Amino acid sequence: MAYLLIVFPLSLAALAFACPSNRLRPWLLPLGALGYLGLAVTAIVQASAGAVIAGLDDWLLLDALGKVVLGFLGTLYFLCSLYAPGYLQLRSERSNRVFCTSLFTMLAMMTIVTLSHHLGLMWVAMEATTLSTGPLLYFNRTSRSLEATWKYLLIGSVGIALALLGSFFLAYSSLKSGLESTLLFDQLIRDAPRLSPPWLHAAFVLLFIGYGTKMGLAPMHTWKPDAYGEVPGLVGTLLAGGVTTCAFVAVLRVYQICRAGAEAEFAREVMIFMGLLSMAVAAVFMVRQRDFKRMLAYSSVEHMGILVLGVGIGGTAVYGALLHLINNGLTKGILFLSAGNIHRAYGSKVTDDVRGAIKRVPFSGVLFLIGFLAITGSPPFGPFVSEFTILNTAIRDGQFLVGGLFLLMLNVVFIGMGATVLAVVQGEPPEKQDAHAFKDRMSTGVPILLFLGLVLMLGLYIPPALEALLREAAAFLEVKG
Image: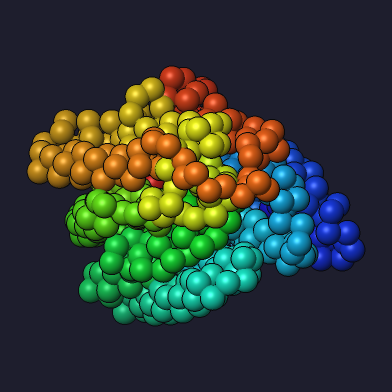
């Protein structure tokens, strides 16, 4: 099953590349995504029932954390794939061969990251994920999208180089203590209490910075505003919800090694500081932001900070962080897809040109406004529950300064982001409008509604099966050596 989860999307990538029809090729995406989601659910059910989903001598293994991430990635990718045919039909003047091939390849690489239990394999898969998404960033073929692509690849390469150096340091921490060198996570966790502390500290910092660059944590976030500002909404959703999630998984794997040894407190302090820093930087750049797609990039920086902050706080906040991983990714689907529709309707993404979206594209405009309320932690949406869980844990555990700063940053982001969103959706649309401008339609609207339905459901009711998976994953991460 582990091999099938990887081979299936790779086979579809080959099929998409071989398919000669620009019109039929996009329909491979929802069909393939549905098949992948079925495989993912089957693997999760089997693993929960006690079956071992593994391969490559346990270099690949579906564990408690992997089950949560695999199910989320399958769901996110499927919902995005439903949007793809309608979007690519609007872009029929451009070949979608590389676009569809890259989407399937990216899914396969994200799957390897999720299943990886070997530090080297995870490193290779993370870089392969970056490379496979590069062509997606350049889909619009403009000078700005080319610049965004190069910035994404170059900054990501620096991050992955630091992660490689951290991997070497982690392996050397075993040798320094007289142990057999290994990059298998299970063995590293077992040996964690005996690893050399100075080398383990250095390894954690390098790995955290390296994979934090892929997440887009501040101050390593500089690729995000350009990349998210230039990509199609579909790709933005997968970057903000999928690729960053895989990088977060890599950070969690390294954190788990520190947690199993005697270095948990060191790792937590680093994560709390970087989490709050990311939220602060995002808040500053969101105030008076005129480009609403770049605003979504800074929103992603903020929420990556929330994820690592939750893990740094520990306890129930780890459960909150894992729940927020899902809530953030699904809510980004509402925002990026509706923002993409608004962008096409106006031909611009700056508030000087875009206003009155609720009147010109009422469906997308309303969903964009609702998405803003959801992502800023307003009830009754899912992010409110996960953010409240993190805040409540910080206050309950006596971390009043952390909880107070967390709440302050949330308020600043709400005000800054709200000003931009309201400028987009309110007012009167500009009088000049292309007769062939984008209008709301079922093919590009229903997938956003499905995202909204899930986000609303998670704010009101968490299915018992998902609750059990999240609790199991949180306990798995918090285990002591």
